[in-house]
Image 1 (cartoon, rainbow, N blue to C red):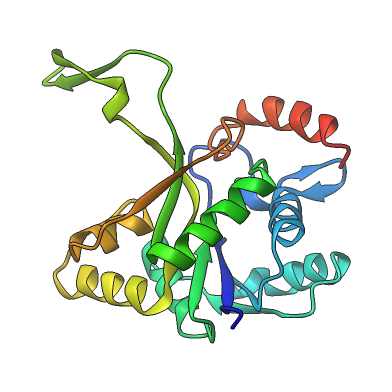
Image 2 (tube, rainbow, N blue to C red):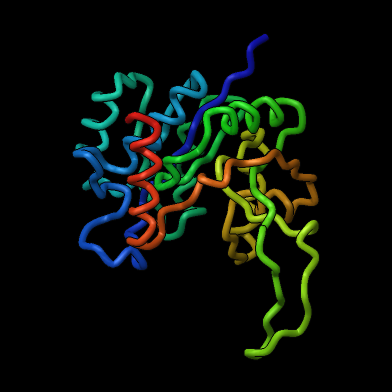
Length: 227
């Protein structure tokens, strides 16, 4: 039997480090907002049962136009929360699928094979993330001084998408909120439950647009992809 899966895209951030007026997920390249390209990568990689976008209510109309331009009919919106984890949790309220894939709204360069591989592995293991190994030497900094050099083979730079059995990530985030904890990615909530998290390789180009300088890379990538 085919397993059902929804995609959740947290898109409630305001981009404090982006240094450009407006929210970075709506920054336009070739006349289209970044989230347009992100959604394109997802829907071309897999046929999701639902596309759930967590955002501020004042952005719903623009997001609806974007979804319609991509011929997405199975979309819905949920109100963003105070933090990213709250936005994801709010979106889970609308999720009717067995599994959920969570992907940053400003990671448009994810390879379609990465999306597919994360999902297929999650169907087997219930909690899967993607990431890359660092190519630079990684050192631990404490009180402004180097305390030691870390083994690169033990370091993973995590990306999204991350994919989970819905009830597992739901339970993990509930645990985070009930205990007054803070997490910087979704898998951390599952890790706190003691559940193992599997890893599949990501593509190095799958960057999260954070600073305006990231736009230069994004322009080159999207040009090569013929968007």
